[in-house]
Amino acid sequence: MEPRLNSPSRASFARTGSRLVEAKLVRDRRGGGLLLVCWAIIWVTLSLGASPARDPKRIVHNFTVDLAPLLKWWQKHDGQRPLTAWIRLTGPIVATNSGAWVVEGKLDDLAGHGNSRAGDAGSSSGSETVRILLIHPPVEDAAEFQRLVARLAQLNQTQAALGAEKAQAHDRDQAVTKLQQASRRDRAQARVLAAEDKQLKTVENHAETEQKPIEKELNEIKAKLAAYPKLDQYVLDCFALDLHSEYQRMPVYDYGDPSK
Image (cartoon, rainbow, N blue to C red):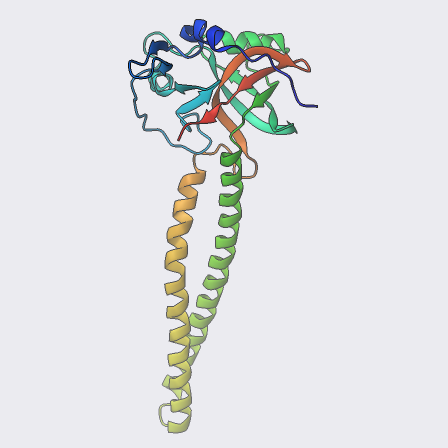
């Protein structure tokens, strides 16, 4: 059964905008329509992936929300916290519900809101886990995580096979070198050993050449995966909007649609 949530009207969303998105509505001089003007664009140099810095702009109820001020504040906690309705959520996905995710994790906004919601669900301090429903979840990020993990395993397997091939060729080449030294007077055997030595060096060099681009891609993938809390499981780490509603006794949060 798909969760039915009360969707605020354009006017009501605007009235609560100072608390939800800390933005103001202004009239467009050209078209006379309402535009949502968020904070000035501030790029925050944080790692992406599953970190809360992912998707700094979100679309919620047809409005674009710029989370850059919150991301900047989160680094130093200097001054008044902006965007207080956006709560940091961390935890794994334990179920799905009509496109939404059921996440069992921790809520933390450093302003009391996350703690109070966690307390309603059974934790007064917010340090314990709470099960929430996240609508419009970052499915692309989860899919990217699975792709990176699968590619990492594939590259590691290929790298190991090339390493074994290289080591085997190297060991055999050392044995051939010793045989060459012991049979210098046997020209026929020397020619056979020389041909084998050349072939082994070719195999060894080829394996080493094949390993270089793989090593480069491995480093790139590991750098991307470093932004994720765990490698054996997709763990969400993001800011989500507290909708102050519940579905099957679970508080409901909205990730929003990423604004490209």
